[in-house]
Image 1 (cartoon, protein in one colour):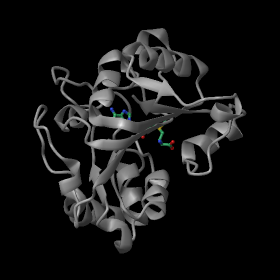
Image 2: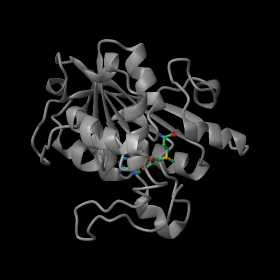
Image 3: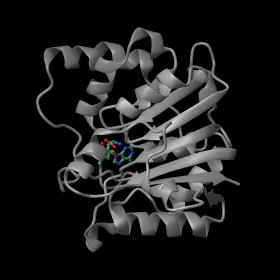
Length: 237
Ligand SMILES: C[S@@+](CC[C@H](N)C(=O)[O-])C[C@H]1O[C@@H](n2cnc3c(N)ncnc32)[C@H](O)[C@@H]1O
């Protein structure tokens, strides 16, 4: 987890985003990527309630769209784009250095199927049309372990309801975390929504990362620190 200080969002904004927006100084090359490449890949401005169809954001349009919330440095998103040539990938990440990293790694061959929102995923969820996504990834969301920071955690009843609305029936929600309390809380919120079925038949199903689930930087950090992540898959009913 990064800084405890709130980001520069206004406190009266509908969503307040905690966590760091900018890390180490950007290189001139990264600044150029953000200034010139990001606008060509950016998610269009869409207002909450717009009923936006993300399939139309790609060239050519994609029939199936997957969303990654908090893609960090972008390695998982890019690996999924490379492995799934008919899918459009939308990534949301407020951490500027992470976005710069993804832009630096993104080859021209994948650029037509990747769209980026440098910001909070929650307003975007409210702007998307019902059943417009086939898969959502939330990999190692900031755990905010202190009780007084509980409201900062990404999973909450309203967010789970928004995820249920934008995922199509049969779609999949994937969540990874190395924080046991976070996993329990998210499982509860997801079960209480009544919209998802947990795809776990045995302990191996959540203890082992599936083969079609590329590793992330944060996962490597967790393993190096001796923490065991869980990999949770839920099917939208
Ligand atoms: C612990 S990092 C994990 C990054 C990456 N998924 C990984 O596994 O390496 C959590 C990320 O979620 C991002 N994040 C936090 N709140 C978010 C939100 N509301 N919408 C989108 N991303 C968010 C943070 O900026 C941070 O990069």
